[in-house]
Image (cartoon, rainbow over all chains, first blue to last red; front, top):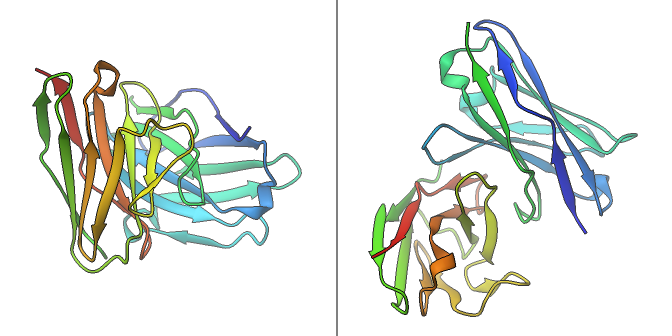
Length: 115
Length: 106
């Protein structure tokens, strides 16, 4: 059974960074890209980007190129997203979703930006 | 970038009703269109992939159709457990989600 288990809620100060993890199981981690999606409170879904865990290659939506950094650790089957220079606009739930595309999703991680 | 226009934004229907939700792409997406259901506090769940393919485990009352720029999700007989928000996703060129349709019981 494919499972994507995300790390717990984060609180970040304005200007700081947070890093969220997504641990994959039930499939070969390097066979699929991992996407990340943002859902702002009461809003729709925005694609942030993907990472190919096998090669480390990435693609980002233009809006998130300076905001998000995607990485992956094949030894632990875990994908990461780091969000930098946090502002109130970054308060949202962030999901990982396996390529295939987007057939399997993590449970979401709430990031709250607050001083 | 491809834009997706989803309608309606809000829908109120009765149990047993036939419900349709639409997504219109800003250009031809060649049937690379998925539909998702999201309940409050949960992750989106894949219902339909590539326009009209039912994901394993999804009830047959859900179906999809369309081509070119216009796509439709149909629930043939609405059930109480279908109350949720529904999103479309185009994956023809990168990825764009529709804004969502909130479905409630009348």
